[in-house]
Amino acid sequence: MARAQTKKTVEVKAPEWRTMEIFLVGTGPLVSNGLGPIARDGVIKNFLGEKPADKKKKPDVEVLREDTVHRDEEGRDCILSAAVKKAYVAAMGRVLGNKMTEAVLHWRCPEQLLPIKYNRREPIEFMARGKMGLVPCFCYIYYEWSVRLPIMFDAAHQSEELIVNGLAAAGNHVGIGKLRIERGGNYGTWKCETAKE
Image (cartoon, rainbow, N blue to C red; front, side, top):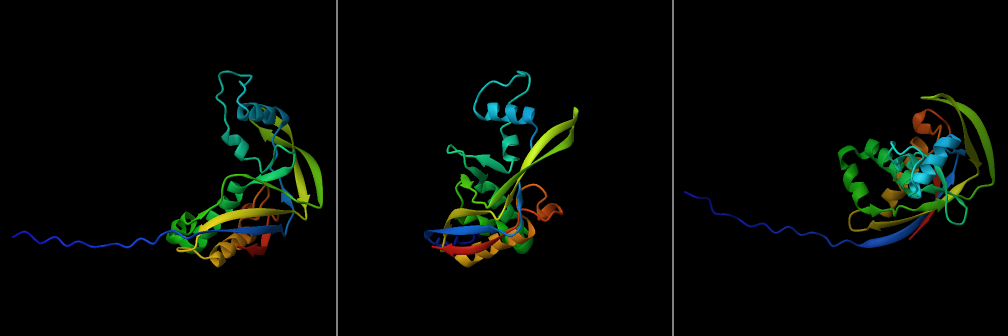
């Protein structure tokens, strides 16, 4: 005898999108990842769509993402908002575990360049070992830095407090840039000073 089919109605809450700005204030200097001049030149050409010098090598735009600091059209030093969200995802994964996906799903951080405000910037040159031996590289250290992070989130599924706390945890335990705290360094950390909707 066939069983009678029962219908279930699932109510899905409509999203309640809200916006807010969070100011990330550096609690430790920010150190940009360094690339050698030859590698940097090649990456920039690939990013701009120009043909690379070696036609056998395919353009690797992803390499550009490995560099912490970029410059916008106005020549300002910036960081990618995706780098901040990556740190947030890492921090929330440790705290929430399997529930991390839901926490990240209901907030949006448009991929864009976030201008860095800083009190002082110092260049550092160093030698790094690569496939061809030692390669001259450089990076910058930013002191007393901060960025403004715009966020859109679904208030029906996630609170402003959860996002702020998650970003604070990311700043304390993950960080961004070279020698960040996640990799045993003491740089690239921040705190959430203010948040407003």
